[in-house]
Image 1 (cartoon, rainbow, N blue to C red):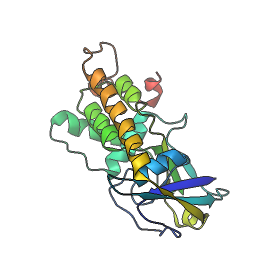
Image 2 (cartoon, rainbow, N blue to C red):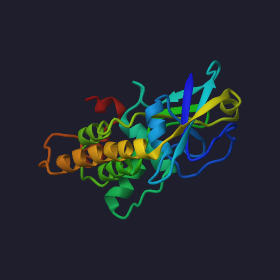
Image 3 (cartoon, rainbow, N blue to C red):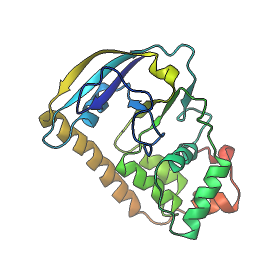
Image 4 (spheres, one colour):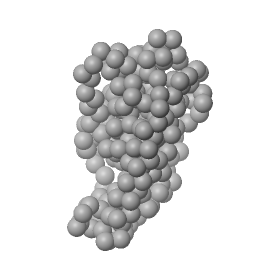
Length: 222
């Protein structure tokens, strides 16, 4: 497997145990199989970046693919709830977090690698709106397709870190890739704003219905 990691510096040896605790899937080394996404993630306004390139042998590794057919978007949301900081200021938000944690639990402890959506600021706000009862499950699924943000791959275990090998890097010009990064984000935001203007979608699965009817993963096929 070829992996790419966008950064503002060269990382020839990723460090096990390093990183931010409150990232999507917790502490880990976050990569993608899409070099264009890695280029966008590497740059910021007026600052060039680097795409670090790695080869990874996945034989013998436990890979948790949260986008696989055995999971739903709410399973992905459960992992976010356990790692990201969610403001639960209303009774509905608190009950939603409790229900999702209880009924859509995902055991990540034994995973060497986690694959799934990347919750940037836009996508994280969609997840919060679902928990708040503002958008339906169907709308959340649609929103996560906006911008075509792609999958991220998070190395979690020491075994995974021992299986990755640095093969080189590419320097990334912010003049080319920062506008592309912002255009992707703007497309997603504009698409979501248009969706927010839609009327209440009767018959769709809002978090209140999911909780009240005690719906499970098998009930969420759309």
